Image 1 (cartoon, rainbow, N blue to C red):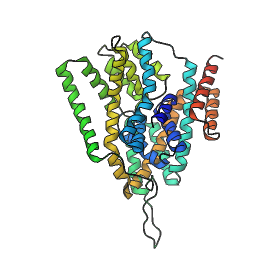
Image 2 (tube, helix red, strand yellow; image 1 turned 30 degrees about the horizontal axis):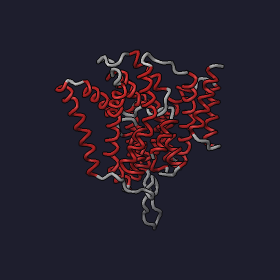
Image 3 (cartoon, helix red, strand yellow; image 1 turned 60 degrees about the vertical axis):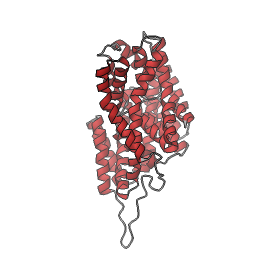
Image 4 (cartoon, rainbow, N blue to C red; image 1 turned 90 degrees about the horizontal axis):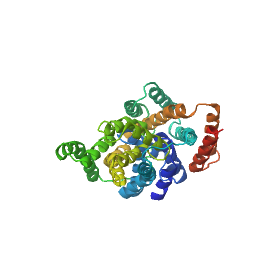
Length: 397
């Protein structure tokens, strides 16, 4: 688990939506550790939860595969490569650095191809009939017309409600009703997380959310204040990715821990590394800490911002497993899965397409990457490296 997640952590560029494409390629298509429906179930759950969604998906897959240690290994492998790179950047180059624009743009373009391939495969599997395809289209329309984290949660909830109402199997005349076979019902195995542990995770999250601000006021300790700020950011942001930036800026700039210039410099560096954007917290923790304590500050901020995600996934998985084993819940999950496909389709346009495709040659590069992934089955890391090199060539042509 650790080796596979580390490879993803070293090659997964393009933000949380692209990460879901990389995860699907590695965990579903290449290794078969879970099927399309199980993967969509996990994505749907993590879209409901606050915190960095792609990291939560990775943690959940690790837990389902190998228990708590598997979840920890999945998080370490996916997160630590970019966190280490940003920590080194913060400690050594405190004045800032220039990230090659062509390199960054090439990776943004290939993210379009990765997500398009994921949507193509998931749509064929999870939206095979007119009803679910229509639901996916409606979800994409809503997400495009009213983009916000709240819209995503409400769209998934509406998809579940419509699925529960409209997508139950209809037995033919004279035949007994059969249990639904979609959404991975036949291949589901019980969650390795028990309910007592899940309830303990929820209790720990609540205690920290309530107790850390109180301890911060009483102790007047900078370490406690730093941990509280990053923990609260990780617990309250929906979707992860660029959504986390305003909360991080409010957490570190107004108190004077990090200057606006240093924040902007670190954001540029965070755009150039793979893995989740929330590892930007490691850079901020290293920058605000006086030398030689940059690595300690980075570790504290990194643990604080991702701890809520781990607690939320551990707390939710057993109950999610119980729900998705019920026939009525399977119908709701059909709707949720279709809505997830629609949301990914909307995300393919914005922010991915609008942020990367600016000229015909950008579209040509995205199409080449799509063909390499879908038709020639080339490994994503190779397509990413080739697209980044082409992006540099375009920039300096």
